Image (cartoon, rainbow, N blue to C red; front, side, top):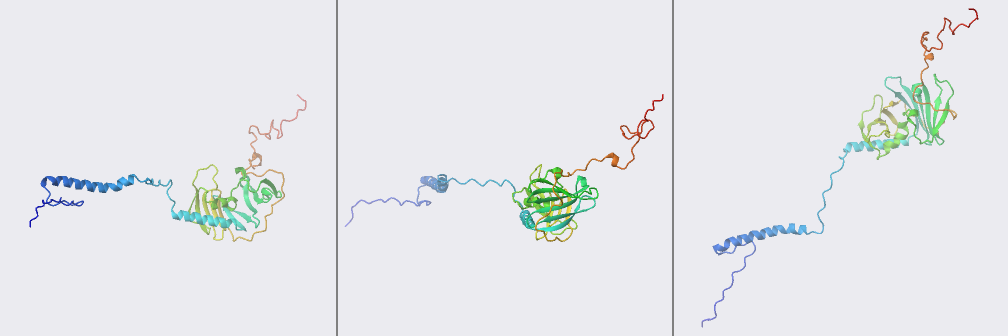
Length: 314
């Protein structure tokens, strides 16, 4: 028996994305390819679209560092010097150093760091332009300058109190050679101090580990003098080369005393300054010019002491 139901025409199956149906009429090929290209573009644009809608915007790139990083070798040198300076602060001793300034004759200074943290530095030629010997000392009672007996100043030793033990010496009273053993050690251990440190060769005759120290900030009063600082492994300062000259350890250090003693009694006198006293021309040893103007001792009227007294005779 024959089936008289009308024949059904099923639509062609839908093509999957990216497929081009077979038997597509020629006039439908171009629109189909165009739809395919648009679908691909849409898929590729989805990540950008969703990124733009993200709740958290992308973080800004990190700003460039304000300063170039310091080389690792310089950082290591700074750490080594700080450790040695810290050991020097705990080092109590009596040590002698040669002090060389230009081509002048070397002098021998004595540094005493006592067990109670008092200190004393004896400085030959440390005042009055190198003509007076002095001692600087810091004790629980304050900071003192003592004038020491010498060939040019045979008076007994006497001391003057300059202030509290941590006070800063005015430049007119400061020989500066005491600083590497006292307050400059605080600067060398302070990582915030504006310093640049690098390894250096030891000055002639010096031993130990040496470092070149520069200041990195311009200042009228820098925290220390730029130069070369040398230390033994136990913290003993072995050499310093700075604007005041060169200090070199002259002999092995000796044991420290319990405390330092002032060189003499404390008086109400004036401390000795750094500048040389004015020279009296009459003490220079040169013969006076008898005809020089203003010479109080020049002869007058042929007499060695002045005009001849009048006798009253015309």
